[in-house]
Amino acid sequence: MVFGQVVIGPPGSGKTTYCNGMSQFLTLIGRKVAVINLDPANDALPYECAINIEDLIKLSDVMNEHSLGPNGALIYCMDYLEKNIDWLESKLKPLLKDHYLLFDFPGQVELFFLHSNARSVINKLIKKLDLRLTAIHLVDAHLCSDPGKYISALLLSLSTMIHLELPHINVLSKIDLIESYGKLAFNLEYYTDVEDLSYLQYHLDQDPRSAKYRKLTKELCDVIEDYNLVNFSTLDIQDKESVGNLVKLIDKSNGYIFSSIDSSAIEFSKIAAGPLDWDYYRTLAVQEKYMEEAETSEKDDKMLA
Image (tube, rainbow, N blue to C red):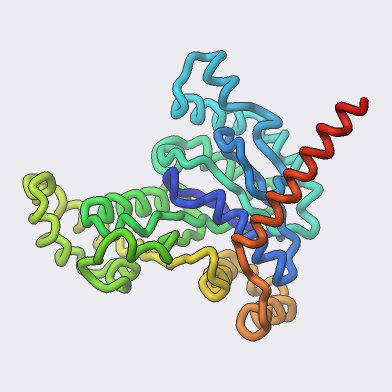
């Protein structure tokens, strides 16, 4: 069995930053990690990419050739990937023996609650390669400061969970910045536990734009509460304890924790007890310096040639 994560979420929610930070953290606790970029619009990757969809298809080429905007082109790229799933399977097979997989998907939310091609790609990989994947749905924590946006995020999370049919963890990302967005109407636990949304109604009524949709908002809140599926974990990608707690939750959801009890116990002891040398931005700076040196060396080689 091969374990991994499907990283999704709206644009700006921090998916690429998450993949970079998570891959570094998992490496520090002893896992061999491969990051797979399936976002053809992501042309500035901060992490070392094991597989890149741009080797198969490029967003800019699709937009130029078919006169499509970025959203239409992304749907085309996912459809093309589904039809050429053999390419991705062949690239993944050498990694299956000893790697933990992180799939960095596009930020176009329609791909994960409306269209079927991204789900088909994931399902085909699960069936053919025997993968155990958890969907990590990132939502920017600043949405908690606006009741209307928060309810929209809940609906998006619920729709995505139902559509993908995977073990699923919703995450409020950038939680370290939440205070900079303004004072929350309730404590943080209210937003993570998603209990009794009727308390938000008063705050929605204070906004003239939301007040006239009072009945619609109430019905939407009732739908969310009736399903009773949505809650959130929190994440500060710079904090060892925050990342470690999320890793434990992910490992329980996809079964990694049961795959090798001894090795899992050793990994978790590193998170809990040992002084883990974890500094996301310092590690990122080292990577950027290495990439700059590599580019300079490559340019010098071309000049000499």
